[in-house]
Image (cartoon, rainbow, N blue to C red; front, side):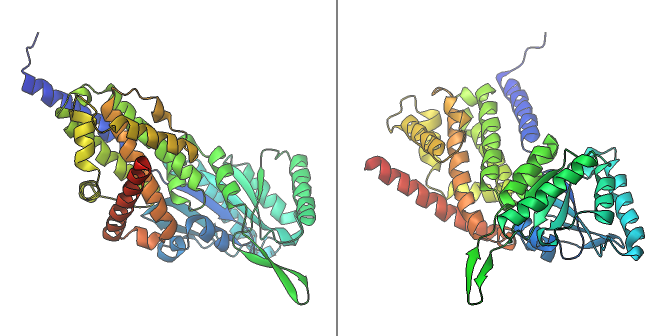
Length: 405
């Protein structure tokens, strides 16, 4: 049996760690392919801008796939939109375009590479039309038969609730007659509007339903594609949090199971690697591509580095209440609506608990930044890094003040 030196054992352990980390932190999120169909005036563009941000259409490449479908794709947003154009279902001249659209969707749906398939279809119907029959119904039936997750989106839902409910019930009734009982229907008003109550007065009508559309889509998407869709959408803060918690927990678990993560001094090196990879991955969920150098700058210029490395990983005695600080943070995250599976990590798993500390602190901070910035601004890495450092340091000062108080 081969006798290994301590140095060789460490080298092999490190190689194994690198392989596991690379598996944990694939930099490219899967791209969700979504067909958005509907006749002219159905509100597709408004819907897409509201869910994914106007920058998708502005900076994305509107590549014509056929005369009747445009593909929108932005390298920084892990979603590809296949948008039908010029669809007028009652016009005789558009029969060929309908067949063309169906053929493209069917071909993509049959791809062997599951990442290259169509993963969902949103069919938009203007709720004001109150009409669901004839060519439109036939087209929807043909798309539904392709066996791709299918959602009818009732757009521009500004009319009286009673009227929209009646239209939705009519759609459900017809779908049932046609054997399409699995089609979900989501009502959406994609942007704020106003309702006229008389000749001289209007009342505001806030946008609604976008989060319902995101939730329903996630229910139907294949598991392997969900993280890309969550990162791409700009509607559900909650879904981004859930995804980030999964990332935090998988890295914390890796630290729990790692041999060198429990060895003082050496665990500084192994923990730093995990933290850097974890923060890169969390950044992607918030549409920000951070390099290792950028993440390192965030860590080194935030007021957490030495204090946590020493008291969290090296010192045998917790003189500064490090574990209390971690517990307080995790308890606060539970109150904020996070699941916080990491709260169950024992105190002696110090590397895992530190990873949770960094992960939640970073998620808190980049979430605040994501709410303020456009997609274009999120792609300015230098600006993002500088702002993150300011936000993280502010949050840490606030926590210290609360603990002292």
